[in-house]
Length: 44
Image (tube, rainbow, N blue to C red; front, side):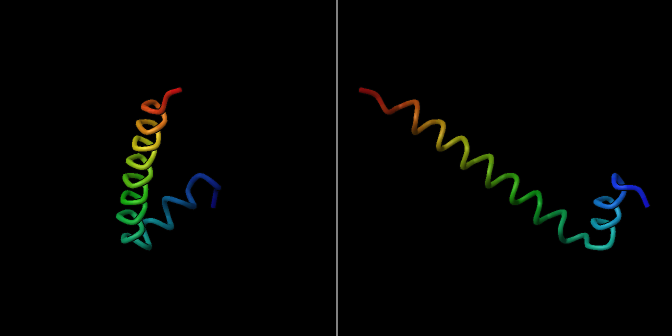
């Protein structure tokens, strides 16, 4: 089994993790947007 197939095989065995990873990705991207917006509004 090669290294690049391990994640694919794991997700095939655990399909709920696809949803978990997607949700985590969405939350982190939204948090990054909030932090970027907050920092750009702060001024001297």
